[in-house]
Image 1: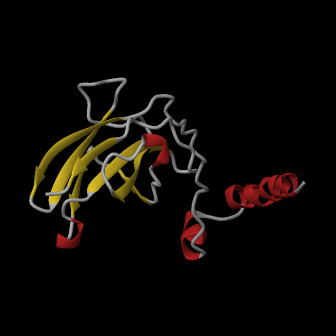
Image 2: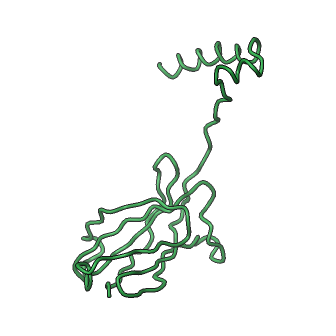
Length: 147
């Protein structure tokens, strides 16, 4: 019901901008064009996730578009959402308690660790995500030991 009310209000008051207010009026009253909601679609495929390089207390991972392997770009309007867990080695994939997460727009990520985290195992998985939070299927889980 509330959606219909807002639609009616927009129909009535939206026309005022076009019929009465000049460009100077709109600038003075800070009236801007309404943003049109995008039609972003979450990818139906999982991103590729690979271990790249490692050094003392750091590691790099790379993300790839599995639909276009030669491209590092995510599908349009999709971002990389990744989750990590730092803990004991050889945990079954179904039992990994992923907790730490982040959203990035690039094709790689650089992790930095502390001396206290040395010799632990880092587990990472990722998804494509769009602005409303919808996600693609999960990538494979990768893991590596921190040196």
